[in-house]
Each structure stands twice: as structure tokens, then as C-alpha cells.
Length: 412
Image (cartoon, rainbow, N blue to C red; front, side, top):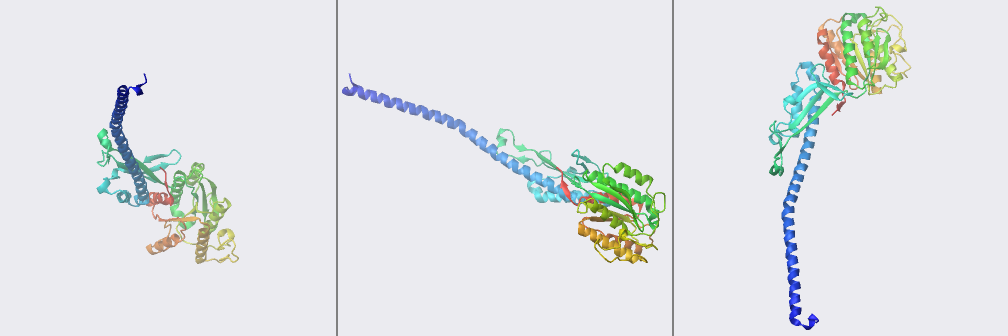
């Protein structure tokens, strides 16, 4: 019989349906409550770990930049190691920069002194070797570690057994690494400089080693001598592949003027050497900021009773119509020619460095004058070194290698 016609049974059926619906709703609420009870802690945990990870990422970035900045700061003072025999300045500059980035009060000592090392960087093998023998690089390791007393503390991960995180990052700053240093070495072989030919040889080899080890493997190097005229002893060639042969030549053949296989003596004319070097670099398409002329001399101009030609640097520039002189040239004329050639090299972007030895020059006043005059020829990123005795050659050319990379490169 139809239940609608039986009110009692219909009401009972309705009540049953309502009860079932209520039971179902109660069951679903219970399940949801369980799910919520389980999910909320997980979500909190994941959110907390996400916060921790974000914080750690920020600290990693801070530490990396601090290591890089500290290495750059210390590296700028690498040459002080050669002049003082100490790395104290390098260490203090690196640590000061690190502290400026990440204060000791807040982050602890992120760059301990023991984490600053001098060494050499091999751009081919990408390996830093700690050494104090002619170093060309500075390595800095910045740390936030438990062992160093300054770990990174987490906000939430401690509840899961990870209250701290250790961070460490290393940066190396190398000088000249990977950059072309196309270099012509100018040797004064005049008689007045003959007493220091041994220093001349040692200087040449120090420069060769510096260029071949610190610069790009594509770098070119050449050796030119000058007296009153210039003479190309070793044409521009790859610094790496010609290193051995050039070293042998310097040790066994290079000598002062008038010696076997050497040019005849005819005074001392720096301009002729500069003109030759500039011309060689131009012919090779290298007369620009990547090129260096390194002039080794006692700086004393000495005119001889000869006729000077264009190749001797008598014209201020290649387009000049009037020479400084051709015959009856004076010492002052030769110096003017040297200044002119240096000025022209500067317009091309060529870097000129000078290395002064006293040679036969006597008297402190004369030595001071000639070394200062020679230093005035420096152009671009070149440097002026004074190495009056053989004993100081290692430190002098170590300083040259350290400052060679006026372009400092972050290599890691």
C-alpha cells in the first residue's frame, strides 16, 4: 500500500532518512577532522622547512659574495707580499672586507686568517696550489660552520633534529689568468749596462715565466735588444711553446753589445727599442690594451756619432714629417725621442712597464734622476720597478707578476 496513505509509516520512513543523512554527515565531519588533524602539522612542517630553506639560500648567497669580495680585496694587495715578505696586509684587507659584508657580531668570523692562502692558479687544470713561491693568486674560504662557532641556525628544522646548517664557499682571485698578455721585452745591451747582463738575463726569464704561467696560452712574447739601433733577437711567438727555446737563448747567447751574435755597440737609444716593439705589435695586430712593452735599462741616453733613421724612433709619430734629429743627435734628443715613442704607444693602448737597474751609473742623485725619468715612460697599466741589485730581482719581478693582471679575474 502506498506509504503516503499511511501517515505513521511515512513519518517513520522520513525519520529514518533524516537519521541516515545525519549519520552520513557526522561520519564525513569525523573523516575531515581526522584529515585536518593529520594534514595541519605536515603543512606546518613543510612551511617551516620552506622558510628554513629560503633562509639558508640567502645565507649561501651572502657567504659566496663575501668570499668573492674578500678574495678580490686581498688579491689587490698581493704585490705587498713581494715587497715585505709577509701576507699580513693581504689577510687584513680580506678579513676587513669580509667583516664589512657580514659583521662579526651577527655572523661570527666568516673568514678566519687560516682560510686565506697564497698560491698559483692553473687556468688549464682549474687547480689552485697553495704556495708562497711566486704566488699569482689568493684563495679565500668563507665559513658558517659549527666547528668555526658560527653555524646557520634554523627556525623550524631543530624540531626534526637539524638545529644548525654548515655552509662553506671558496673563491680564488688570479692575476692575468686567462687573459692575453702579448709582451715584447726590450733589453738594453749597451756597454754602460754590460755590468748587469746577468741581471738582464734573470729579469728576462722571470718575465717569460710570469707571462707563460699567468696569462692566456695564446699570449705572444718576443725579445728585442737596443743599443743605438734596435735588433729583434726573438720574434713574437707563442709564450708557452717558445718558453724553453727562448730561455736557452737568453742563458747561452744573450750578452752585451759587441759580443758574439750580439749587435755592435752604438750608444744607447731607448727610442729605437720602443719604435721596434710598437711596429712589431702593430704588424701582428696586437697594438692594443692586451699588449705590453717591458723596458729593462739603466735609463741613460747615450748618443753616438751615427746617422739615425726612422727605425731608430726619430719621428714622434709615423705620420710626422720632421724628425727630432738624424745626425749630430744629442743625449737630450734621444730622450725626447723616447718620450715621443712612449706617448705614441699610449695612443694605441699599449702598456709600457719599466725596470731600472743602475748599470754603470754612480751617485745617488743620478740614479734617482734616471730611475724617475724612466718611470715617466710608463703607460696604461704598466708599472715601474727599481731593482738596483741582483739580490732584489726575485722580489722585484715577483711584484711585477702580481700586478701583471691589472685585470683581476674571479676564477672560481
